[in-house]
Image (cartoon, rainbow, N blue to C red; front, side, top):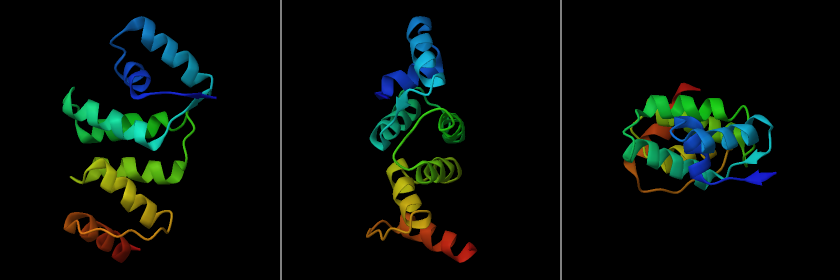
Length: 125
């Protein structure tokens, strides 16, 4: 299993360097890649801040990527990507919300937007 950094995922997604994109694709398609949540957070930051990629597009890219890579908790990360695409919450807040809503973990925060989002999602259940 290969732990990869954000650059590998970004090259795979953007295909802006053919050689690097091919190496990334080979590893990802072979099912040899493990991605830490922190790496996903960096990918979100770079795609949003550097490449001005829309939140929904980032959400779709990373949700699709979960079909080919391993990570610590696929269900939590999948929900976090979905929340990121449908809200204005920071990505880390989306991960925390997913840990609470999907993983049943208690989260303490003073962030009103995050608290309101979690309350709203809980009331929808």
